[in-house]
View 1: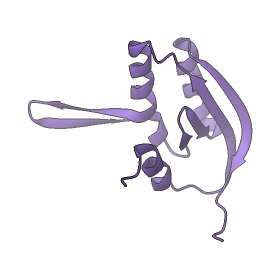
View 2: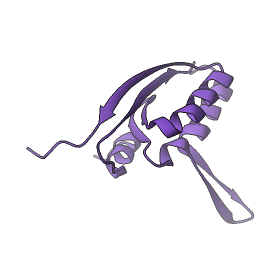
View 3: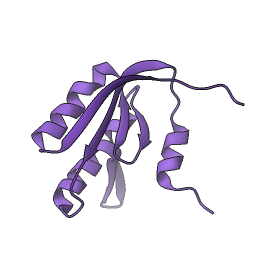
View 4: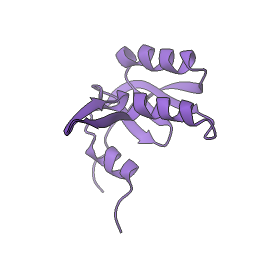
Length: 107
């Protein structure tokens, strides 16, 4: 069975224990334009033009940002403002909670 893209993304991320914010949002899946805009901002995009591929990284690739699951990110304080501004300007409902994130030792 192949792993889902979200699990692969989460496993690739490396991070040291840190404090920051858990951010979750809700976008109406019936609004294709809003969903696409959010997806491009958060996950980035790739396009091909005249045989050349261009890759535009998303918010999750910024230093310290961790993908936790569908519609949930861990965001360090220096990165929080840009995400919240995007969500607010696009009228996307969201919740922010302070917390910490760190690795556990293997068991």
